[in-house]
Image 1 (cartoon, rainbow, N blue to C red):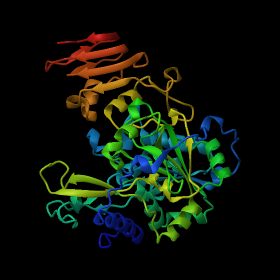
Image 2: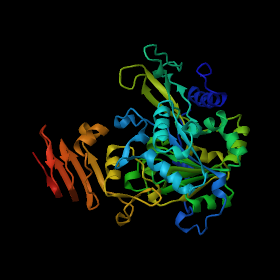
Image 3: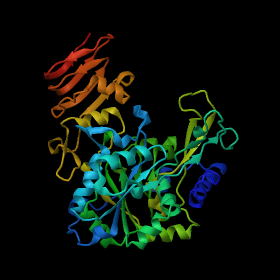
Image 4: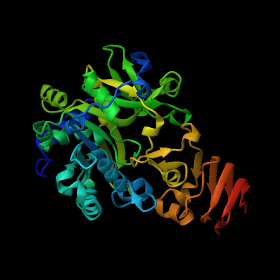
Length: 452
């Protein structure tokens, strides 16, 4: 890592994760060790008014290191069009510009990876010069060695040395801030608060009321959570550790098989992490100094192959951390229950189709918000993975996004071409067992359609 130019903070963070791997740590958290998180304050009833001057003390950081490879993308995922010709990055830039109102605050940073940096900077330079020099807005994500599963040595892959490395997860943000010098620079500029969120979540904007409440609370760390639904049963949840009363995150990979029923009980464990975080930068600096320059995050052991395109290549372990897991590292950390409107991530092509449809509308401050008539519950979409898992396939079949506002569920199997003006209503099932696409012309479709 040192030979590759990575800084001491990145090396220390990886060394901590590697030590956990060597020790055989599993990271398992049993149900007997935790209590459910309950009675969290609601963002809808905080009762605060935005305080003047706080934006001048705040930085907005967007995590922008992903390529969206699971959807077949080869460029920064944030460059994918989501509303008309506007990409995630376009809307984020407009969110920041709107928030600034002609001023220079809040500060804005993009945490890019080596894979997304060039494309992102080029897009900002071409379309959003008002934000400033793109290079001056960049916080560069680190990279870490892949570890051989058989002997825990670093992977050697001479035919493509890039495959010897992997991203360390968004928990890397703390080492990045320290090692890059950005943390000290921001503090020297009088920046005290950071709002961090994913670039593929356009519902996550800096809310001045939440900022004021966080600042007044005196907390070091605040996580935005929202209520789990049946669709979130397999996702991680917030809990309270019995031994010290601290909040923690438990992911499914950290839950023993015997406790999985409790893990998936959304009435018992009600909240999940939106990955929208508020951080006091001065307290973060103190915590880093207390722990020899790192935040001791639980390691996530991700088993992969050396070449992700070749499942028979050498088995490896990728050591990752999650930034939200830092909630257990601060004694005064807290969480706030936010509406689902602040959580609209795009992880699959089904998510992308919903975002592009009339289910989501663009607000005056350039957020994507689920139509309020749906009461926070979008329809269930299941698109044939053999045809629509990748963006190219989605855009072949759904170049024109249909109306989904009156749809409760949509199941598509087989090839389809959706033309402009298509409206899906109620429960829609499309089974096409031929190789010839069913062409849906403008009109209303419900029930079983296009069966071949």
